[in-house]
Image (tube, rainbow, N blue to C red; front, side, top):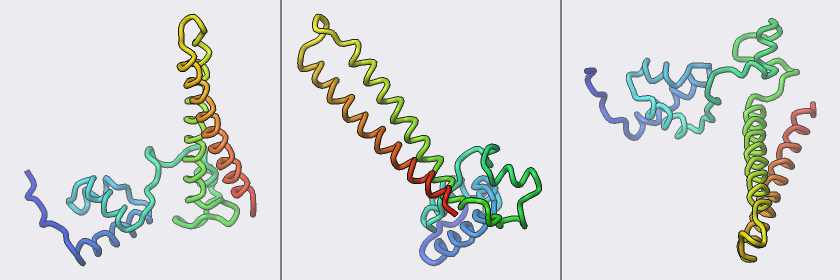
Length: 160
């Protein structure tokens, strides 16, 4: 078993967080950073969070993203630089999160609508039917809000 490392506190912790943040932004994975520094995955993740780093989505590069496609086609500039015609990576991540949220909201709305449709006067009370109707209305508002946000982000991506 490897000997345990000394506890990180104060300035030492902040310095480690800065170093990890810089390496992560250069493209290193959290696992590789944990192995290189002899720290746990969880600690490295926490230090990155403390340093204000927004972590990349799991699974590596998205093969469908414009930045990855450009890299495969040899259109990407030097490593770490995004060509001028490519959208901001942070905006891409935000767009992916908004798409996931919109999909989830739509699924939940569809489920609530199916549940409401199953209720009949014979099998349920008026109170149950009213609650189901209100649930559908709430889920509908959430789905609309998620779709509007997604639309705004897509417009932002299209602007030069």
